[in-house]
Length: 177
Image (cartoon, rainbow, N blue to C red; front, side, top):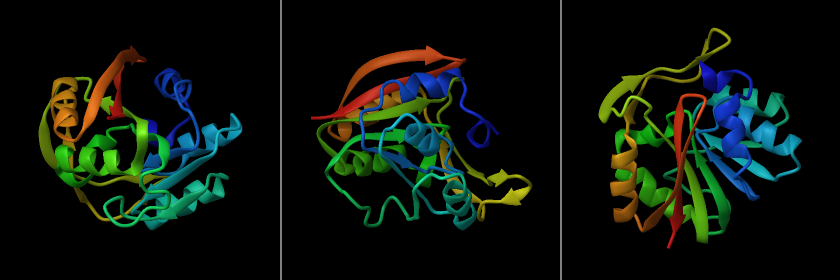
């Protein structure tokens, strides 16, 4: 339940690389959006789960109830977008999600993405909870290794850049060409 907890070393390593404004795709209860705001970086979270968006807003993070595959404010103009805490799995189709993220980014914009630390590539069904509350119905999800992220990124018009590990987690920068 890291995504519902406090900022850890891995999160901090991502936040250090953010240039605002930042779009947090699948923001959950908003811990990263809030941390960005605390650093003076404009950010917006989007999530499908009503409870997650409510929690993000209660914590002082701007968040919209929105499907990332539907209309999102600022399409094509975001300098930075985030797919962390396993969010590369949204929709259970990593390639489709990376193509969508690329379309949300400004030319030269950067997607900071987290790969599966166990190098797994799989699809599954997951449910999310915070504070004992379900954040929505179970959803189709995927896990993607770093190699898969880089391969699918190339197909989505994204260039692979810096890769780093922090707190036992693997991250990469994918830039819109």
